[in-house]
Image (cartoon, rainbow, N blue to C red; front, top):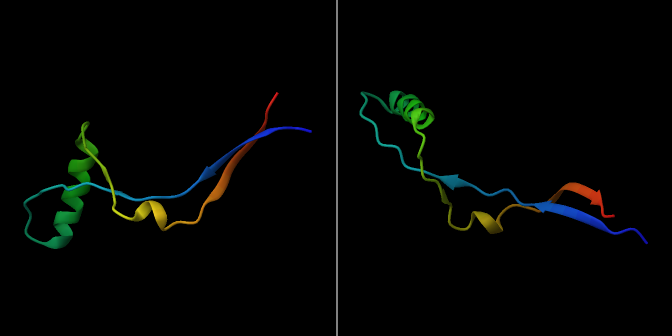
Length: 65
């Protein structure tokens, strides 16, 4: 009988904090994304509880030799 390796995935969320100075909240969002994209060392943290919220789904199945 064939054997298979099955990748099962669950989506989780991560967050980081970016501090910016702007005149409006809308400008703050734009500036934060710009600062994020310019950064090479942003640290992300797994959001508390996010690992138990999403349904699992299969993202790959490979037959083993």
